[in-house]
Length: 128
Image (cartoon, rainbow, N blue to C red; front, side, top):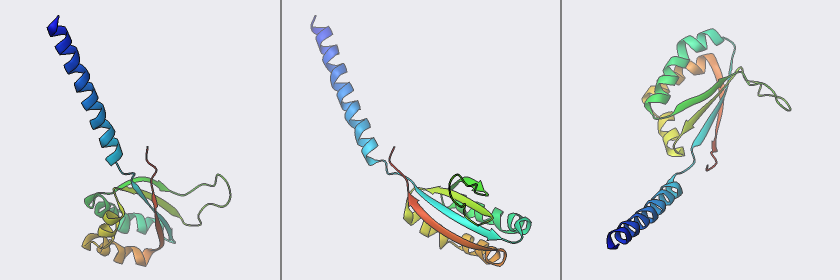
């Protein structure tokens, strides 16, 4: 009988500790930051060939991910006038600034600035 009580108590204590640990991990998780770029280009082919691969490689190397891209379609009101809209996801704002100041991205932007006009902004994600 003592064995059953000991095992049951140990299981309950283990479950309680596990529950607190999971709760603590959820509390530590920060929502992501979304970076939105509106890109207006007169020569989409050159943009996609000369700039996009360099920019995408720099994003990946800096820890960001592209989660959506293409021409925006209106659901309500006017869509952005840009030819392309790209959404990236990052862990934090500092990571975005580090990427934007990296040598790889600056090299890509030298090309990109000749091919397109950019407008970008960031948005805080919502905790899930």
